Length: 312
Length: 312
Image (tube, rainbow over the protein chains, first blue to last red):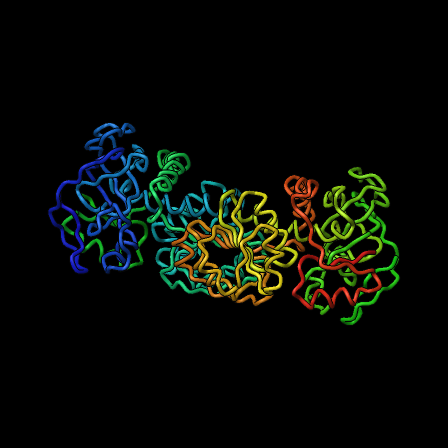
């Protein structure tokens, strides 16, 4: 099979042996694979894949057709459209995925949409609902509303009956994000629009003090990104006085059963919304496999609205 | 009635008008009232009582007999032994408390034990179970194991099947704390004994970085005290990688319904343990009302094991 391959920090498309599905695993003929921030870090050698995932093939999510069931795998039939998060190796013609981590692809979704959906919707759903327990009518702030996780989070928040706010740095993206169902704010003005019950934090340390000040009593901050830095200042007295909590989470290093649990939660709570079209997967651009470097450049250029996806 | 009264930072026992129970409230003839760190702060003008509580009479907990039901109060009869947390005003001959916040006193408890139980057991139970969700078999670390909340927390953790560790600064108290069911550690060595699933933090900012380093994947830190400082350094990358969370909480400023919920939880989960004697209320010393200054001096002297209580 051909696969995006990291060679000394460069991305090339190389031949690899076809992977073989083990017990409970499924061989997937990948049709689309979304890009994520983690791929950029892994390319630079800073974010190794967990054990059991290919170390030199990036890609944290994929969508495609079931090619072959491994021993004991029974959830899907060859030809079924499936999608999933993976620990690595998504940006390849073939990938093996445990059947408990796979999800069916709603008919309405194109391959690029399906390839760009698992990581952002699983991340957003897990952080907002499983971790932070967002409730209908609560005030919900998303930092970085124009990115992949941001656009997923706003739509899931809106669909659940929360009152959504989003910070967006690029003024050219304000209307796109507002159309998803959020009141759009410039990053420097969010504290004036609190208090918020749940804050989804993708920027990291620089936002934490203001997040805490803008948090409602009983509020929750879900930290899922630290692009702006990791070392934050935290006033524990304010945290106590507000009966508040701060969650940190990531998907990649969770064990199989942890990833399977998130897949069941997304199947239950998110797939019906994608199937009906009330929630969509904004695609900024898709690139063929051989243009992987253009895809990564588009990702790192920033200012995009929605996902960058490889079509394979 | 006579009551401990804060006059320009000094404690005196003064006459006050007898309080009158309002709708749903109960007039309690107080027999014992525990001292807490908050009383020390309030005496210095730094921790005002919430609206509706006496501003000049300290005391966050009490035990006594029901003297009179206010209009519509039906849970208790005159003469019943009751105890509760209060927003203030506990250190007085009489206090009015909403009936939903009161709890019955198990027969086994003496007045000093009952007067010293509500604050520490409610605080510990709420932080450990309601907030941090401690589970049987988890590894549980209590910072400050010799104090009131610490002794309560260790016993509740042990009774629930957790594996308990406690830091204790004063070596003379190690045996007392170990007898409660904890492996006792000097404060500087706790990181070597991790990872811990739940950490109960009473010291505050200085411990936070090491707490996070000693935390297990999926661990929770419950911050309920900041005697050592409020401004902490928090590495959000570590928080994410460990799928960890940090809770802040306090009881005093919660609304009536919040305090009533904690009382129901303590009635359900803690009173049976106090009634059977499997959990006890260590009393360091008790003082009559007129020796209130000696009681406060004993509290601030530190190094004690268990509660300091006024008998009234």
